[in-house]
Amino acid sequence: MLILENQIVSPYLVQTALHQSIPIYYSNDERSFQLDDESKVLTNSESCLTLLEEQHPDHPHTRSSALVKDKAEFRELLSSINEDYFFRRVSLEELLHMDHDAVPYPVVIKPNRGYSSVGVYIVKEKQDWEKAVRGLYSDLTLSKQMYSESVVDGEQIIIEEWINGQEYAFDCYFDKQGQPVILSVLKRIFSHDQDTSDRIYYTSKAVVNEIQTEMVEYLDVLNQRLELRNYPFHIEVRKTSDAIIPIEMNPLRFAGIGTTDVSQYAFQIQAADYYFSDQKPDWQTVTDHADDAIYGFFCADVPLHISRNLIEEIKHDELMSEFSQILEYRNLETANDRTFAVIFFKTESMEEMEYLLNIDLEPFIKQKQMKEEVK
Image (tube, rainbow, N blue to C red; front, side):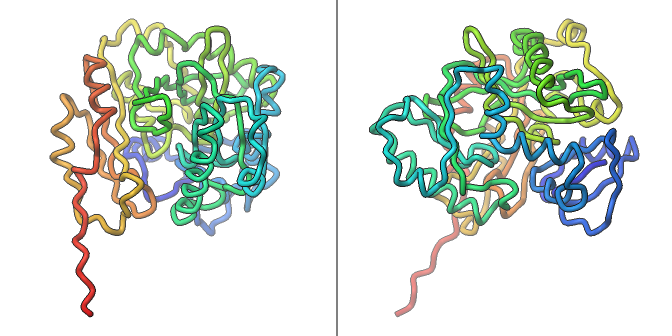
């Protein structure tokens, strides 16, 4: 079954549901539904988990999702795999007043329950601490207007070791035997060492070949602890010279706001279709037949200092002209998400990727003129 948050729904996900006659429920649905232990469940947003918690609190999917969504609990479980990794959970109040002299910099601070990069800050040195904490507090205050507590909950904060390594993201599922199946392999790039935005992820046959086999082995070890079956998820990791270390695991969904569809464009793999029909990509064959191009998605976000309520117009046509080859421009008209478009694109060069990564989006946003108050 599918549980959908109805504001941002991938057209490919809708096609899969219609083609396979998958029952659809919504995050605010009042209909009851039955689940057995072998049932397949996919959502398009973690806000949908509330429906599972209300109707089937003891289902294996519900219990497992609560564990992996709690970053500190997930870290505890991972400690037997990544034994030397530092993390600590504190309350927001403790964070605001703690003595940070003993913190083993560099670290990352972020909400224990979070979404995207909301409230995520890299703190390289002691003198950066106060600024990062103020930024996190501000982000959490703003996020209360956009996300439910099931998606972003800032009452608990995790402080964890910053991992110096390449970041990847994967859409996957564990099959009915608990074996890992990778459906999408994405690589993340940053504009600078303090960047935590989700602007660009990309894939290619080279990206798949550099980590796919090693990641399957890691997921196999991970599921010896989790013991999940028929379970879809999105997982972000960093790869160092000697280890793979998860950053977070997002339960019962693939890459957010439909961005998992980049694998459809690159390799004709539709993640939801593969999950519900028990298909497994033969990555060797897939990459042997793939071209050498780079396929990516670009999340166009409203800058934090601009209120969505004060936007008169988004200059979509002008933004489109910045790309050499657009595969799909997906305009997102939603009031409670800062992303106003997801752009799937193809390029032959990393130079274009670097250019797109550093575009200032403010010139593409026309703001309303504020009338002077008559005195």
